[in-house]
Amino acid sequence: MIKKASFFIRNLPPHQLFRLLNVYGLKYGRMRSRLFFKYYSCNWCGGVALVVYGLFIIFYKSSGSFMGDEATYSQIAKESLADNSYLTLHWKGSLWFEKPPVMIWLTALAFRFWEVSETAAHIFPGIFSILSATVVYFLGKDFFRSKLAGFFAGFIFLTSPIIFLYSRVNMLDIPVGMFLALGLLALWMVSSGDKKWWLVFWFSAGMAVMIKSAVGLLLFLMLAAAVIIFKKNEVLKNKFFGYGLFAFLAICAPWHIYMAAKFGSVFWQDYLGFHILERFTSPILPYPWEGNSWWAYFKLFFERSGIWIGIFLFGILSIFASYGLKFKKRSEFFAWIKESERQWIFLAIWFLAVFLPFFFARTKLPNYMVLAYFPLAVFAGGFLNYVFKSRNIKALATLSFLSLFNFLPSFRLRVSQFGEAHPLLPKIFIRYFSFDDGELLLSMFLGFLCVGMFFYFFRREPKYIAAFSGFVLFGMNTLVPFNPYRNEFIKKLGREISDISQNRPVELYAVMKPDQYSFHCVGAFYLPMRSKIENLGERRMEILPKSNSEERQLCFIERSFIDSNDITREAVLSYKEGAVVNCAVE
Image (cartoon, rainbow, N blue to C red; front, top):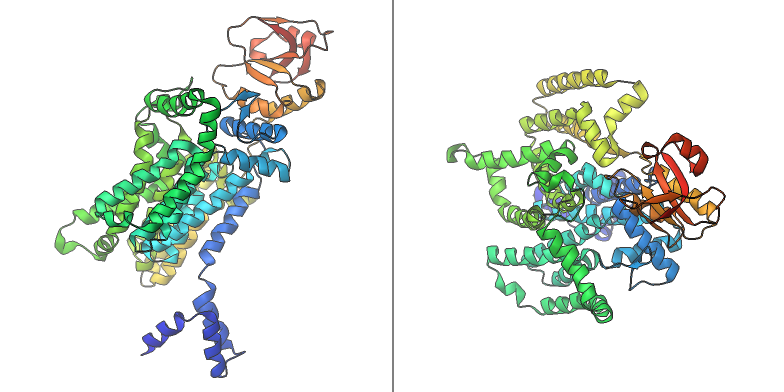
């Protein structure tokens, strides 16, 4: 009887609950407040906490400089805003067909309302990161029927170092990943019987295509796999499927038709031929990441996942071990796995659809694997939810011990290098207690001892153990960003050249080390509009007299490539790294 009454009260809307309480004279009573907060106030706590943390990631010490590709996208938005040209995109004055324009438009919008700066360029990618965590939250919540699972999934997503980094840069991978995740959520809802979600699926597919072209078509791969595996062809025979398909074409077709009509085969050869087909069939970068080896992405998961790689592996091995046990020894954990079998299939479809095409592609880049962290976060969130709700002491102890490894310099350096952030508790120890690496290593062993003792003395109090494990897990894995000041020298160089040229376009030829191929991408953003910048390569350069101050053709020369006497005699600007001189290039 009590359980039925509790269920009835818990499922009442707030206004009906208040009316019921008023009837019994509890209008202003303490009981009313307790009931309200117990049953309603935490419905959105996890989602709100993720949004607040996402805003912290975006705006706290927002990165003050660019990486290579994001500088290119930001420069294109800068030129689009200056020329009022949004359908035909240009980079350094030349036509640019590499990607669809949606993120360029959003970056230009940020520039219009704020200013042309790195911080403004990072606003919309950060917003998409928060939206991604929100979609991951709802996926975890609906997949595993638990708000806690959704919160764990969103938290793991935001605190994976590689995701943390790409949430703070103007790249396309987080935005396109968000729409792929939203499309999969829609597919899940359709398979559960709500056919109106076809509209959301096709809208997501259209936006994903308009952000990163062929990557958006991975949703079709997920759809085909789900229909074949679950044998539900009837879900395609629905009016909302047709409406959604029309919406997809309305989103994607106009811009592609316009570009094809205006530029013909030139557009398709660059848009699909070079940037899709050639990237897939051959390495196109002059200095390939990890040599484009088959093991590059597996190495990436170990390097750029932080301590979560241990959680991923622990969850996967636990599931395989449970399947491998004899039937008599199979526990409630195995029953939970079987109960969630449909969810595991969806997650496997999602992961393989975003992993295998990039794994087999010959051109490999770290940002391509951002998409794989969406299903991994949902999987890990569901696993952690089960462990905490079942109060599995052995699993909680394993999670706590794994989290303490963030005290190790190797793990902290990986987070710093690949996430530009610090784990919270080690940062507190270093900043406020001035611990060096040796003392932090000692702290880790003392942490192991404390965790072991706590688990031993409170082994009969699973609530306390779960609370303590949660504190260790979140304290050791919450990330605090720092500003790396990437390319501060290039930024200074561009500003001073702009002053010298009175903001007129210049031709800047760089004589640099071969591996610094992104210099021409980053430098262009800080130079006057329509300036040209490229590496000099094998071409011959002649230094002009310093008196020729009107010459707008400049060369930046690294100190390692030029004699110190030449720097003092010919430099227009002098730096520790090198000099800018007037020059003539053949």
